[in-house]
Image: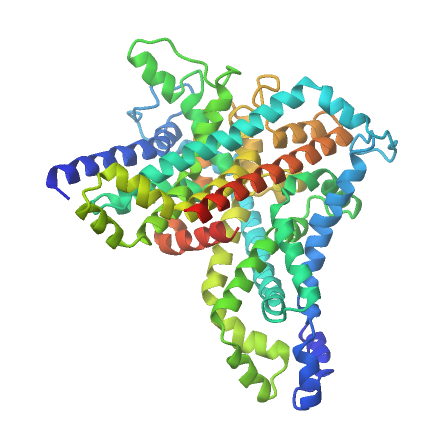
Length: 273
Length: 309
C-alpha cells in the first residue's frame, strides 16, 4: 500500500472514531452541568461539580438497582451454564429419534420472538404470585437464553470433544453424570466463557422483560430504575446524563479490559444464533 | 440432583456388557428435562396461551373474558394504527439491516487494511453493542432533543433554524433507525472482518497479475466469498430490528400519537395503558408471523446466493 493511501485511510479511521465518540462526549459534558445551565452541549462547564452524580445515585436508588441486576444476571448465568451444558450433552451424543425431535424444538424456539408470549406470560406470573420477585426474572431469562446455550454447547461437544475419552471413562466405571461433569464439562471452557458473556450482556441490559416483571422499586434492575428516574426528571437532563453514565460504566469497563473475550463470545452467539 | 442422577444412571450397570448396549442407545432424557421444563413453562405454554387470548376480549386483569371469535383479528385489519405499526416495524427491521450491512462492511474493509488506528476504531465502534439500548436511547435524547439538544446547538451555532427531530412524525422513525444502526453496526463490522480475514490472499495476487481493478476484485472475489457473513448479518439484523423496543421507549415513547410505534411498543401500550390484552395478544400473533416469514425469506434468499457463489 502506498504511503499516501495509508495516510488517507488513517484519516478516515480517525474521523469515524471521533464520530462514534460524540454521543459519549455529549453524555459527559451534560452530566457535569447543573440545572438551569443551558450552554451548548458541546462545551464543558467553567465550574466543576459532581452534584448530579451524587443526587442521581441516591434518588434513582442505583446502588439497589446494581445489586438486583447483579443477582439476576449471575443467578441466570449459573443456571444456564449448569442446565444448558447438561442438556446439550445427550442431544449432541445420542442421536435417538426423541433427541433429534427435542433439538429441533429448541432450535424452533430460537426463531419465535419472545414478545409474542408476553401477555400470557405476564398473566401466568401474576397468577402464580411471582410478580415483583427476582426469582421470576432469573427463571424467565434462563428460559429465554436456554435454546441458544444448548445450541452453542451441543455444537462444541459434537465437533471438539473426542468420544474415546468418554468411552475410556465408562470402562473405568464412571457414571454418565460423572463422565459429564468430571471429564466433559472442564473441556467446555471456551463455550462456557461465551455463554457467560452473552448471558451477562443481554440479561444485564434486559429492559423488555424487566419492565413487565419488576415493577416494584425494591426489585428494580438498572434499566427499570433508569426508566422511572428519567420519567421523573425529564426537565433535568444533567441528572439523567449522570445516571446514564453510572449505569453504563460497569459493563463498559469490563468490556475494555476483556475486549477479546467479549467480541469472541458475542460473535459466536451471533454466528450460531 | 446428583443423587437423583446417580440413581438413574445406576439402573444401568456399565460393567455388564449386556447393559452397556442398552445405555448407548438410551436418550438420557433426564439430562435435558430441566432445560425442557424451563422453555415449556416460560415460552411454549405462554405462546400457545397467546392464541387463546387473541380470541377473547380480555382486559388484562379481570376474571372475566368472553370468547369473541375472530373479532380481534377483524379489528386489527381495519385499524389504521396496525398499518402504521407494521410500516414502522418493517422500516426498523429493513432500514437498520441495510445501513448496518453497508456501513459495517465499509468499516470492516477499512480495518482490514494495515493502518495504525484500527484497534482503537474497532473498540470505539463496538463499545455501544454492550451498552443497554435503553441507556443508548437516553444518550441520543441529549443529542436530538428540541430544547438544548446537541444537534440543535450545532445547527443554531451555524445560524440555521433548530429542527424538531423527535417530535416530527415523518422524521423520528428514521432517527430511531439511525440510533439502532449506530449501536449495533459493531456486530456487523466484526463478522465481516472475520469473513475478510478468512479469504486467502492468493486470490487477490492472481487477480492483480490478471490486471483486475480494485472494484472488480471486490465484486468478483470479496463479495461472493463473504456470502456466509452476509447471510448471518442480514438475518441477525432483521430479527433485531423487527423486535426493536428499548430505543423507541427512550427516544419517542412511540409518539407523537402512534407515529413511531413498533409492534413491540404498541403491544406494550395496548396491554398496560389501554387495558386491551386480547387485542395486544392478537398484535403479538401478527408480529410473530411477520418475523417468522421475513427471517425465513431472508435465510432462503441468501442461502441460495451462497450456493450460487
